[in-house]
Length: 66
Image (cartoon, rainbow, N blue to C red; front, side, top):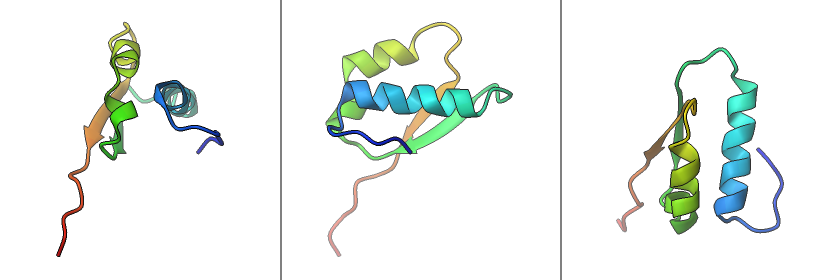
């Protein structure tokens, strides 16, 4: 967890960088996220596409009404 004032693409990248630092021995790090727009931002996708990135995002389905 990181403290941020605004949840956006930049803070999402900071979170993912922190997660990668916490697990240096894992070849692949699955991360489960909600479908907030900032998680799908081109800036986040470009960061994930960099060589050596170990994060693999998995988006949970939106909550439906019961």
